[in-house]
Image 1 (tube, one colour):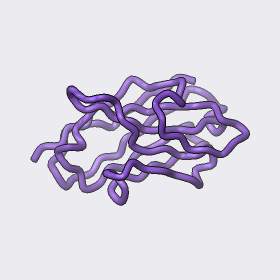
Image 2 (image 1 turned 30 degrees about the vertical axis):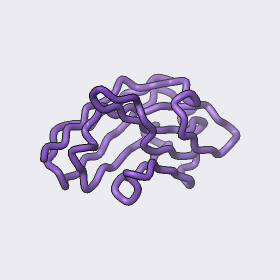
Image 3 (image 1 turned 90 degrees about the vertical axis):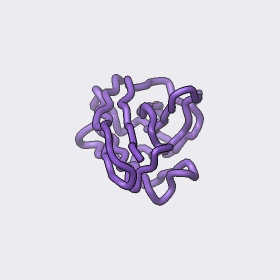
Length: 126
């Protein structure tokens, strides 16, 4: 599967963005999906993950209640809605996929994913 992330941009603190990640394959529903981010000078970190059927989601503590991960398997797309953005959310955001069929699973570890998108930059100004 190939992944194409989009939707990043410059936003003021408190604002919102919606990131999208489109997958190339019709078997998208067989993949657990995740979002990660990498701030300048820092390591890539987990943000959110969603199971194949979309019913189970997990989040990194600092984004709980502000970010929402969702997916539309008919459109082969996973989304990340970012609300109440803070300057510390500034980073390149990456989507990632892992074939997990038939399991319904979420995953937090970078090492658990084997396909990555190219990243989309989110910049939050204070």
